[in-house]
Length: 229
Ligand code: CA
Image (tube, protein in one colour):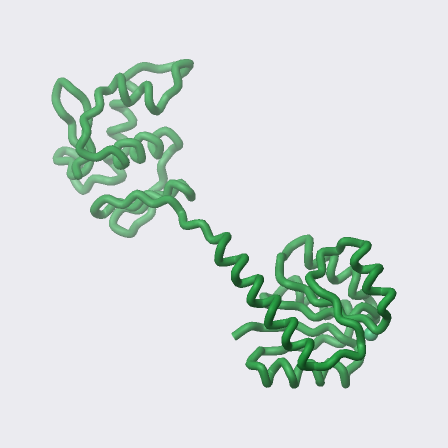
């Protein structure tokens, strides 16, 4: 259920808006002064804000401006004066819509629904799934650069992470130490192929049950390493 915060000092208007929105299935909270309204807007999660312009303590302009510094939640501004609406537009505070008093409650509800629907589409299209590599008990989140082994998170250094990810993304393929060194360490790096051996050892300590009998990264004697599929 969508939660809406109304910041409105005229109690009768706030109650009317609340009644209509609740009839349409929304959960509605009211604050009657700007300061409490701003506090709640910033500290709680709402799906939409309805802000009156002229408010005691902190006005609707300022609330709108501060919400926009932190959130993209739709904001509907309500004003008694049509001139004010031109002013709000001119200020570019990031409000999504403007309604002049008096307005019909059903018009308000229609606008609220339209903005919530638009916002939900927007959020939906912005959700980007993390890039995950999963092989048996190992789960590598490439986006967050985190690794879980049988559900337990393990810490890896940057190069260990890169090496493990590279091998896991190319399973069943044998890489020589030289190839791995070139792939993970740039040419300018200080170090040599022994670095690869050291990193493989450290990775195994974190992912293998028994490092003498590796289940994930196999040593192919005389050649290099392979991530077992
Ligand atoms: Ca007012």
